[in-house]
Image (cartoon, rainbow, N blue to C red; front, side, top):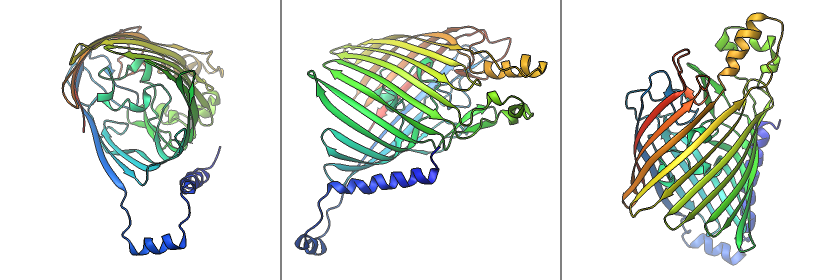
Length: 411
């Protein structure tokens, strides 16, 4: 694995290289620069946010937006599932170079709303077709995934948790390059990215898994033609730190069952997305597959389809999503308690077997303001616990109805 110091040198080097597109000043230009006041960069501020309320009809499990949240909604209304606010500054140094900084306050791994730096990068367009960004970047594992925190830009109240819920990587420290070309009267875009995660994620009540230092690499091919957009993506993560399973079990578990270790193991995310958006009709179809090298987490597949039809300021929408897991043969070490109880119970926490029916409506009642109401009906098996929190064994039956209201805004 590449050292963190080497990554930082690579990022700094990339930022320095951005200046190569600017010609050196002549002597006369240098004298003018000393006497004339310098041109100040153009700075613009933007913001976005969601004020949301969520509740379910079941106290035997907690509904969460994604697995980065340590707790979720039961039968009482709570704002923590969807509420957030973000502020973004764009600094334009020239027509081809800008810096972007974004800070978001949301409910996350440490049960707080502590603001986090989600974007902090410099972008340079070497040509209209080729650009490079270096710094802290939002992840783009899946189509539409880079904007999943901006509720106003999303059709539904939240991205479907069956599909996006297991994605706990929100940003990386690294770089990406993008190449765009016209192809067959459409536009083909290719992106490659590489970096390291600076994040943590909830593992169990009171425990977090340190994801910092994990290496992330990937890319996608995106083709747009008229109202159609098609994207194929691949990303790979190699974990740097071990999950805190020893602290959870109170035993030197990983020494006894090294096949369950995650440090140094990789997980691969493959996805395919298709969007049709023309006139009043919008249709989204997404599929993904997650494959783990290690045995601690079950492999999974997920997908969803959503359709919306704009009727003036009102946009009703319908959707259905599905998530399922494949558990591989578990390691056996000859200890009955570990083989028959402990190892199966640990892997069972990564099992999902459910589908969700969604119905909702969006009302754009004013410029940059939208109200959304949504109902999700989850139908699964009692073993489907991965995409939820706080499930009660023996009482959770895999079925839940979730009610949500939200006000989305941008400024």
